[in-house]
Length: 163
Image (tube, rainbow, N blue to C red; front, top):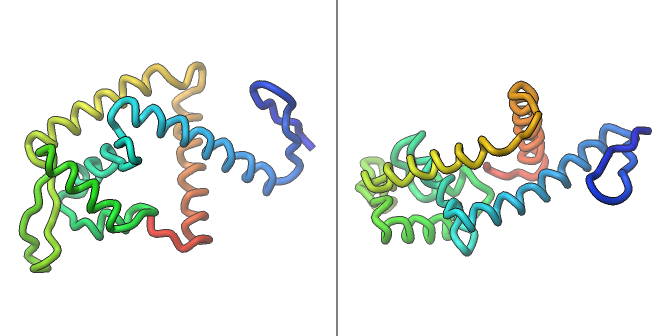
């Protein structure tokens, strides 16, 4: 058994791979809530939890998408993504355009104002990220990203989630 250092308080005993994975999941969840609070403070996330940056990033990387397509990429409902799309459209950041493949399901795309806002958010994210990581190497950060991505895929397979 190995005792894992745990910031303040007593360390946790990790005696198996399952316990180590469980500990990682709990740390990622705790980190998520801190990131979410920072995101709400900085405009990456709406006050009600809509992921502005993630929504806009999907459009920037993949081009115009339907609201159901965006929702399928996340563990969330179409209605929640529709609410976010409507809010972003009201701000002039996205627009609804005709979908040649479906008469009733419009495509959502970034407007020029939305593209500029996405660039601003990206620069802000990189600025914030540049202050984090301390003495952790880029190689270790990328390896950790791969590990978290792999575990995320396992969660999807286990739980039947789309994103």
